[in-house]
Amino acid sequence: MSTHSVLLPAMLLALLPLPAIAQTPALQRGTPTAFETRNTGDSFEQEADLDRRKKARKKAKPKTVTYTSVTDLRIWKGANGAILSAQLLTFEHTTPSPGTLMPLIRDGKVRLFIHGAKQVSEISIDTLSTADQHFIQDLDAARQAATNPPAEN
Image 1 (cartoon, helix red, strand yellow):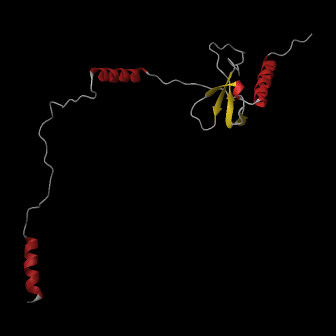
Image 2: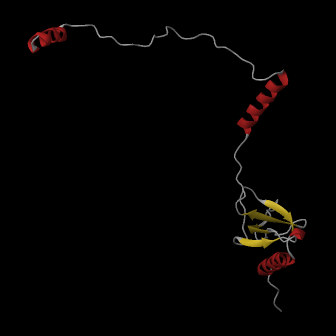
Image 3: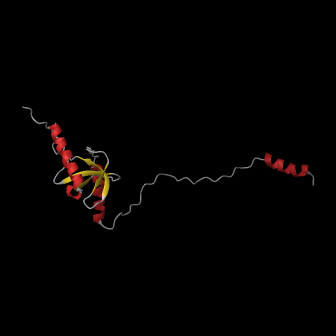
């Protein structure tokens, strides 16, 4: 068989118009009019609780909290010998007035922002070492003296 006799039928098939075959997705006709409903809880109480949480999320507003750091990041030692790296923060006033200092010690507690923590911790000043207790008390006294200078005669 010659090469020409094999190519001739192939060329004739190439010239014939054949329908294209392709797969197309079946189209849905119309828009759905009903949806399936399903229960998200086992009882009515769980559904009511879910509704309360949804409403609470809608009412919640972002809250901005500003902390004032008094010290840089430093090593604090506990009375039990444990150490931690933290910054000393002030407590905020409920009704701040101009010229008043925010306290460092409130109800025997200090506020520390512990390095690596996501929130501020309030700890009893008695849980700190004696040296750190004196440091905080001296710092508080120096801050008070700086804002309230002694009267000159």
